[in-house]
Length: 265
Image (cartoon, rainbow, N blue to C red; front, top):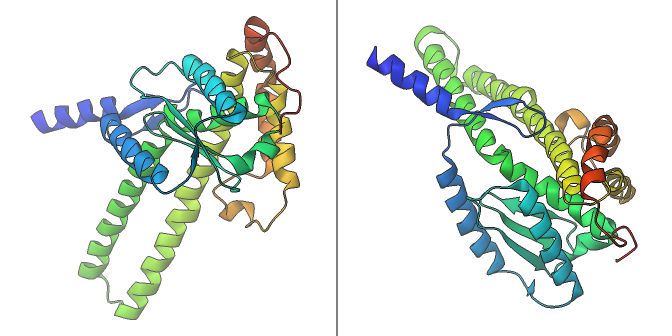
């Protein structure tokens, strides 16, 4: 009975709700571990790149970061913002609030509002604990495959070669059927959270869709959607349209003075 009560308590502690979407998730990796890992990864990454600590772009990133982190309202995060001098079109927020933007993404962001959306998107991943959820899923998949393997070893008459094929197929099935769809869901959720955060911070939410229009215009080789960890730009835009009316209401209450959509990059 004690063991059952402990498992129930652990299950309750591991249950979370994603902001705005309300989706329930199960995370078995404590936040303190994720935040510590984020801090360590942040320091290691910055030690290997050139960080821009002065100039208008750095100031804009810091200003936008402070506005987004304020509405994200996570006091346990050690919010930090770094602009990395690198042509890569990318940005990220590690668990714990450690944010990195590459200078190569700025032309695609185009303006401060575009930066606010991508900032909100990346912060949304961290606030929604998507990293911990992915780790929890992987732990579950590995555990499930281990149980199946034990059963096959004890009960079946498969040859070693047949077992290799079987577990290769099971691993691929778990990746395509479980882990990748969750990853695409995480991206869609982060888009919604990002648009809501930018609106609450005073940036026009319509710019979120324009960011994905510009991202789509970059082109490049892409895998089929069902084998991709990210939804297509078209799917992202359609998803954002559904949430736009709610975001507009938040923006109407928080609209910033001045021009935040004029071309900056």
